[in-house]
View 1 (tube, helix red, strand yellow):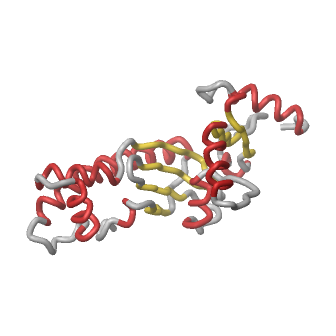
View 2: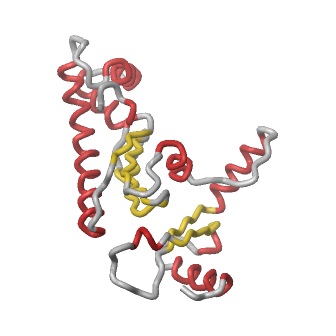
View 3: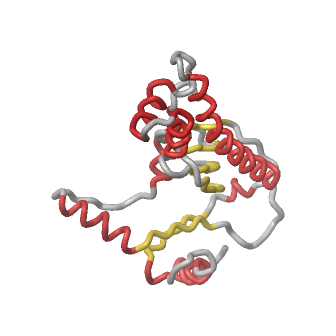
Length: 209
């Protein structure tokens, strides 16, 4: 806790090597000291929790190329979850679960005191819903995507019964895994998730809520 900034950087970079699957020289590394309030109730220790973020240099080079090609200027880049937190999480203290249902995957985050306290990736998303509808109806992917967007969980179409079953099949897996994450967090931290925020393209599926 008492380490000066330079010493702290050295320690964190050494520890980061245990969790980053590529050489540290190949990534841009940043970190944030997790507020002690998040660890409230945990056994006393002289250690601190650190949120580490690593982005591969190739990804940054790609983004910088896009920015240059668009004749724009940027002062910083931000990982998606931090933008999402600022956009959709208004609770400043209590733990909130963010379920970001993307196309190919669903990202699950527990946000507490505005900081990511736990993250988890589910390898299913909106594309899996579309494929499930396509298989159930014998449709093309494009037609299945249209059905998904137009009807979602509603029962207003003649094919809605099969469509709803196809959608439920995927979402039940996503929500089942998210429930496991909630249980893991609540049990390990003796705290209750105060709210769940659905976001991402799949999170606005009609009548999902």
